[in-house]
Image (tube, rainbow, N blue to C red; front, side):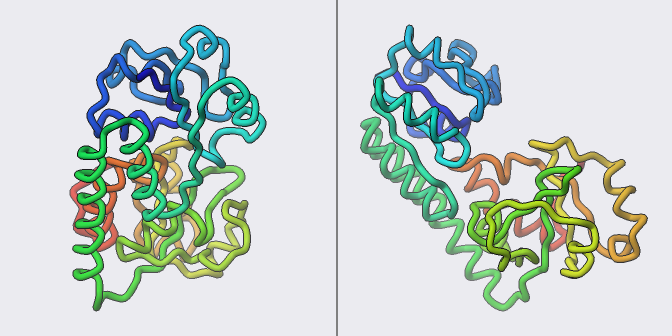
Amino acid sequence: MKIACLSSSYADIAQELGLSLADIVAVTNDHPEKSLPHAVRIGSPKALDFTPLETLKPDLIIAREGENRPEDLKNLKRKFKVLSFDVRSIQNVIDVIHTLGDALGRREGAETLKHAIKQTLRKNQEELRNREPLPILILLWNNPFLTVNFDTYISRLLEACGGSNVFHSDPVPEFAIEIEDMIEREPRLLLLPKMPYPFARRHIEGFRKYRVFSKIRIELIDGRYFSKFGPWTVKALQDLPLLLAGQSDERP
């Protein structure tokens, strides 16, 4: 079976389930070259190049709603078999793995990955039961500052790791905020993922100029914890509780 993955996470999942490199014929440009060196690159998730797909004729295209443009998915569905998923929670990730296990004929691999996520999630729930959630502000972009509300994979992942999103109750999943908005929510930890925006130490120094941010922890963190799911969900559930508790060995 030839598959095309319109989100890097699906290529990760397909490999984890046991598909060979030859099965994954197309991936987006953001997928590591060394992971799938022979797969054709088809642009970014929001700016896809359909031309290679016409030649490759994949048996299945796997897409992510919200990351891939609706008009692109509509056009692809006219010509190819497309599975698309809206991933906003850890349960959504488990459901995606289950569906792909069936679609790709890799149910055993799917059960193994699902079990790893569920087991790590249960472990966190037990260990965090008596711990007060840590108020967290996470920024996805700079100028404008972008963050998320509760109805996102990012927010629910943080909650499963002992955090509390300070913008949990806002009505829009992803939105712009100002410094004043951040200060008003009184976070105790500011997370700056190093992708998709390349936050760096200089940004930490910029925040330290504000009194509130001079008193709280600010951490640069691998953006793949939040932008990728599947195998990365397991890693995030294992690593983030330690980082939130100030026990992580990760360094910028």
